[in-house]
Length: 422
Image 1 (tube, one colour):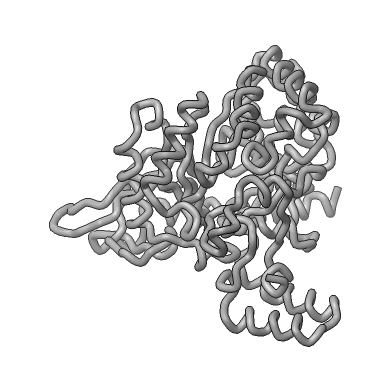
Image 2: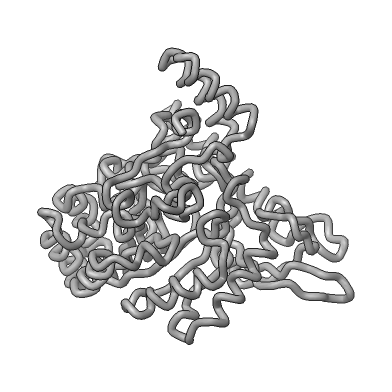
């Protein structure tokens, strides 16, 4: 484990170890797989290299250098997060902000760029391995507020990480209160992405500032904005403990909505019955099943990936088992470079078996909802693995997506040259 943890981040707390992991079922226990690195998460040559260094007692510097070489081969920030999503305020890149979709801005508060425990599948693993140039982190809420004032089209802010719920409420409040200013009336909702509901539910129940967190949620509601806690639940076990259920009730009692999302991942939750059980538990607690994601093409993806056709089958088989209140969930959804792509199903069109796809969100809002088709491929695990159906050379959005990238790059050149002559 030390060899793998030298490359991929590892952190676990007592709650996960004592209340969630079944130690009689190691290594197959899903919560163990979810939090403890496994040898197969590295390619065999990389694992052999790291294991050899650890066993011979190599220096920390040598182990770190070898780990860095591996980390940069693992697609640390997929889907154009660094190249395409980071906007500018004036002539400088806005630290800790991503703006991919017209209505939504993501903010990464610097104090929230860690977690109570790390998920082994996490697509944000690069935030946690000490490579500063790969981190998203904003230290000033003023930059965020200024950007939002300039972009009246934005209606929703997602505060993410890491996990914002590692911050004390007084620190979280410093990031959120500027968003409640009357000059930002166009911001209708504030979302907080967190795994704390599953990994440290005491944050909402008995931590020394849990009551102050309640007051902050109430303050957001009283300011006329919707507050949604985006709970990352990967397995029903995370909802079984009394304190986990009480955490959901506490959040709701303060006027916040709990929406639940997670990727479909091999070794942890690649079972339709498991997902149906999890959605039913969420509905029972008054939480809203929201997304089943496809595991992103980063980090140890090969260990966790499930073919898109199989992901669709799991989703449909689970969806059939729940009532209408559980059918708020969407999936399987890929957060790919051009947008969130939903695998709608498998069909035969004009004699050709195809995957039916459509955008739930897109860099160009005009793409949203438009169906498109890929050749049926039972081995494909990501959008980039798919080929257009019906003999088309490329998908309908690809030419325009290239043009959008070219325009963005030209604007950057103009802004940089303008700053040089200012």
